[in-house]
Structure formats: structure tokens, C-alpha cells
Length: 540
View 1 (tube, rainbow, N blue to C red):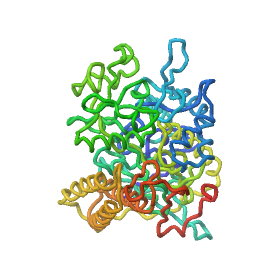
View 2: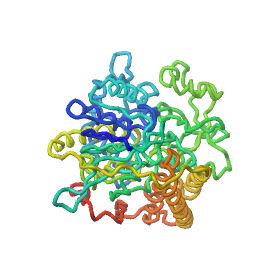
View 3: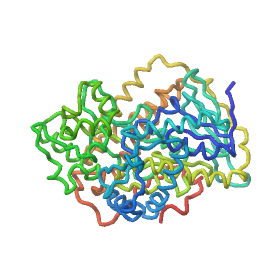
């Protein structure tokens, strides 16, 4: 018999956004926190650079807003940018209250660094392992909190819904969830559900993201009728370690913020020829420049060089990075670092408002899986962790205000696995998984064409049919669920890219190399959208 759990709030995902929201509600309501691995298995743990927030007298909200708008190439929603930036100091104060220790100068003030696209030093960091400091501190608080029940090694299968009494509108009332340890699908019911599942960068062959970044939240929300926006804007981090033994190893942008130079194999700097800010140009420009030079020269990679800095400086600011590179036989104090671009961040996602509400009643989305309007066509470095805390806080406040009026979920049909069998052909899953990531890299990467996108669309539609047939006939597994969601996210990326007839920010196409004078979001509407209540305060 299917196990059934009930909580006031179900949070799916345990990165900075998910844990922030859970902690802010747990004192008043019962909270279930679902994570695919352990509490620190998500992308937050891997974030090296830091969190952007105004904290110095010579900086200002106006400057941070301007930098974000510039990086976003005309697609940021100005009101959402101001909403986020102006809550930065409050977000930092809350993190410090949770036990996050940011690096400080000798005088005790927070040490601030600068990253690409920023006009001031405003990046707070914990040496070069900021994500680890934030994730570790929040995970400790979550583990200690009696009001939070953590479900580790659990994956969302699909959301559940019910109709409101006397209404045709649906509301979310929980989720079917796979216990990866036992293979059982259980039912987690809740009055409110929050998606905090991260992005979909695992759709690409080369990525800085952990294996779990398979677009789960975006896919399950789409299947339940939620709109998604700007999925074509996939940020490629300019500098991922190029090494046969390295997997998803990001070389922090903070390295360039502290003076590292990008070089061709012969030692020539090339970024000054692409942008006035050279190595500190926005990420899309740096990534395209590296891609251009690699293709022009037929080289395997380019190089990042910080050897001109004193050893003591490197050891103080980049201890983790140096130790990790040493494990691959590279001493960054004496050798150049071979780097290539890699898929890094999903700028689009589930359409939400300032409180994290989606088109499906009582379903919220926060963090990388959500489209808030903050990032536009390109994310400004280190705005992502800020977004996680700011919007999780806003969503928690909204949930706390409405939860007393939300009825307890009615009975939902248990998961039915009576007509499926265990598969003896799991090789199909691994082959399809590999194919998705390869054609996404080849056809939907840094530089695109309509022909490439149409090839990718044809392939993903064929794979979707194969995956649906497999899903309908065999017991679900972690690999199958992630493949199903990954293929759906890939299709949404491709469809969005085909609709954009211009080059803007992270979307660059040889067929339409110029930027349109009209800046518009790409919004995809699912066929079952009519059952939902519309967001009225997000878009014009």
C-alpha cells in the first residue's frame, strides 16, 4: 500500500532557496523538505564566487540595479530588479544570523570582491567556497529544527491536484514521490507546495552543475499547466576546468575579479579585443569570445593565468580552488589553468510573481527553477544566491499569510503500479540520456542557427515519444524520472529558442545576429493552461 504523508508545506529541493523557505516557515507550520540526495547535494553547495549585495558607502542600489539591467540586455523587469537589490542587505543579515561566516578584512569589515558586469566590489564571499558556507549553515539549522521533516533520496514524480469546491480551478495539494532507496512511490500531501529544484543545465554535455540539475521542477510544473518563460537563455560559464579527469569543475569568476587573465595557447590576452572591460565583461560575452577563439584556432581550450599574483594572495583568497586544481596536477600559483565554457545557469523557468506564486493555485516556485524577471537575457554574476534568499523570504511571508485559509487536502488516489513491470532494458535510458545532452550541446549551445535548432527539435520529439512509452510500461526509477524531465526541459529550451528571431544576451543565432528594438519575453503556454488561475501582477 502507498505510504501517505501530510504536512502543511511541502518544499521540493534543498538548495539555498528551499532551505531558506523551510526555515522561515517551520516555526509556525509543519514542513516536509524533499531532496534528491542529501541536504547539500544541490548547486548551492558548489557555488564558489559569492552573493551580490550593496554594503559599502561608495556603492548604491542604483548602481547594482543598473549593472543588472545592463547584463540582462533589455529583458530584466526593472521593478523586480529593484525589489531584489533593495532587499540585499536584509538577506545578508538573515544569512549571518543563520551562522554563515563571510570573509573579512584585517579590520573586521567584510571583504568584497568584484565579478564580471559589476561596477563596484559588492560580492560577499566565504573565501572561494561561499556556496558550501551557506549550504552547510542552512543544512545544520534544518537538521536541528523539530518542525522540518527531511526526506533524503526522494524524487518528485508528478504534482497532485484537486478542484476547489464550487470552482473549476485546480489547486496543488501534494506530489507523488519516489523513495530512491526502496523504489516505492509514496504520496506527500500538503496545503501548499514549493518547487525549489534548481535549473536544467544537465541538458548539456558539458556543465558545471551536479547530476541532479535535470529540470525537474520546470517539467512537473509544465505538465500541470504552468507557463514557463525565457527558457532559451542558458548561461554558459566561461571557465570550466578542461581536464580529462575533471567533471563539472567550475573555475570561479572571482579569479578574474582578482586579476586573472584569459590567454590563448601562445600566451596572448584576447579579451581586450572583445570588450572594454576585458576579463570582467558579462559572462555571455566572455563565453562567446572563448568559444570563438577555440573554434578559430582549432584549440582544445584557452588558459586562465593568475601567476602574476603573490603566492600568499592566492592562498588567502583561493585556498579551495588551489587545492582542487592541485588534485588534477595543476598548481595555479605556477601554472596556467586550461578552461572551456560549460552550461551553468538556467535564466528562464516557471513564471512567478514577486511572492513566488505560479499559475497553479497554492504552488510556488523559488530559486533557479523560477522565472522572476530578475535576470533577463543574461544573469549578472552572484545575483543568483541573492535571488534565492530574497524570493524564498517573500514566498514564505505569502504562504504564512494565506495558509490558515487553505483547507486540508482531500484524498488523492494512491500511486498505481499494478500494470507496469520492472525493466530489463535500462540501457535505453542511458542511451537516450546521452543523446539528449549531445545534441543539445551541438545544436542548442553558445552559437545557434535555425537549422541546428530544427534538428534538435526533431530529435527531442522522437525521444519524448520513446520516453513516454517507456514511462507508461515500466516501474519508475531515478534515471527514468530525470531523463523524462530533462527531455521535457530540453524541448522547452528548443521551442523558446526557435521563437526568438534576434540575438540577445545568452541567445546568439547566426540567422538573426542583430538585437531587435523591441524587447519581449518568450512565454510558452501549455495546452491545459485554461484550468489555472492567471498571475495578474507579473507581466504587462
